[in-house]
Amino acid sequence: MYLFENPVLQRELMVNLRMHRGFILLFFYQLALAAVVYFAWPQEAKLDLTEDPEAARRLVDLFFLGQYVLASMMAPSFAAGAITGEKERKSYEMLLASPLRPGAIVLGKLVASLTHLAVLIFSSLPIVMLCLPLGGISAYEVFAAYFALIMSVLTFGMISVACSSFFKRTAASLVVSYLLILPLALIGILLWNALAEQGPFRLWLTITALPAVCLAIIVTLFANTSVRLLHPPDVGSEGAEVVDLEEEAQQAVGLIIQRDQFPDKLFAPAKRETLLPDGANPVYDKEMRSEIFSQGTLMLRLVIQVSMLLAIPLMAYCLYIQPHRAAWYISYVLVFNMLVGPVFSAGTVTSERERETLDLLLTTTISPWEILWGKLIAGLRVSSVLTMFLLWPVLLACVMVPTYYRNLPTVGAGVGIVCLTCLTTAMVALFCSVVFRKTSISLMVSYLLLIVMFCMPLAMSFFAETFFPDAATTSSVRLAEIASPFAAAFHTSFDGDTMDANRIGDWRMVGAYALFSGVLNLSLLGLMVWLFNKRWRVSQ
Image (cartoon, rainbow, N blue to C red; front, side, top):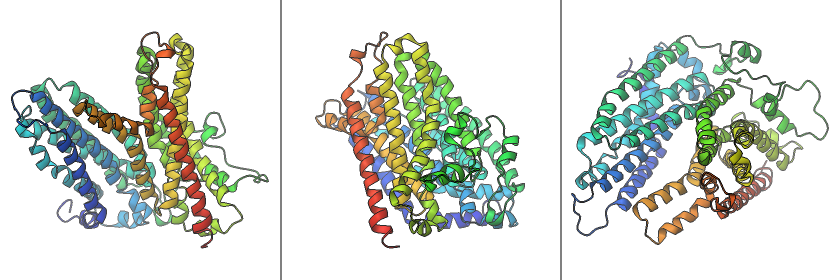
């Protein structure tokens, strides 16, 4: 019932493994890993395997860390919609009413959601075996690395399934899963690199301490999720959870959102008790006052509390103890906006399609421009305010740390980069919401585009500088960094103890990023207006 005769597992496997995107993902995953090994392979015509084993170790470490990062990012995308998908397909009530035990449902969802990811991981074994003849690493270390990878993926998948049981929408489950998983993944990467010179100890730690921690997390979350399915909250028609905001506020643990007080009303205005004034945008008013809180405040409360909890140690170290590392804290704020920004914009138009109200919206007297800017500003307002909650310590540091207010242009550049990134993430997510029909697809494509634009140039530059530092193409690869706000932030990083503004970074990178962002956002906005005016509105 739990594994071999589990109908949930059998159904999910048949659906997931027969989809075309699974084979396409496997192809590109293998292609990317093979490209890393191919281009990083030693170029000498005659290779001495005893001369430089550290080069081979760096290659294998880079290969495994790349797999670890990819698996950490893909695990929530496979598992965060395991239970929310049932709610969105309006089959949640039938699942709860079935004779299946809650533990069998949770286990079936977990195994089915991670099976395809396991196929991706094991399919990379032939590629890593090619690196063993280079020396510098043993087969035991390869086994330990894969074992750690599998245990981490199981843990991240269980976290995502647990989050999926708490929310109705996949978007909310996905962003909370990422906020919980990314710090754990970062800790794993830092520990793996810190223990690089202590091979035996790292091997022992990987096969003893790591499984114990992972199993403790998995068992705890599995039991909690099973109990939640056994005693689910009140559900209305078609599995929609009944959310009373006043009752939720009374039972909430930790942060409570009070919509009539500052600063909560910046991103959560109170319910309207008067008529809409003349000239106001009804789409914007509806998005701000109804859509965001239609499923309660749990997701917002968790996002704020988890992000602030992670920000406190980073703020203390990067802004006050080591002020010259301020760019790292700016990068943390950028990562937070990458995760949160698309959540409030990627479903603005697709939700109209899913509720079958887009046709009605397009036949109203509201112009396409009003529809677009209403949805854009609503999502941008919420994501920007949440991001600024993490940015205010930078402004506070200008008052408390003398070295900052001597370099106000650099601080202003960091704030400007974050603001441009907020606009870009919201615009990309809204464009995906216009193009695609389902919110889940729109959100995943938004994340993929942002990762390609913001992170891929940095990865390419790091790879080129590590393995081809003297190649002529390395300088050309660096040009792609104009699309990354992280590169712009580090080019404006503080230099030295005195932080002389005349010696700060390459300001041309900041200007290039601002120009790239402006052109990109204007192009996407113009294309969306054209789609509404020419393609859809006329056809209605």
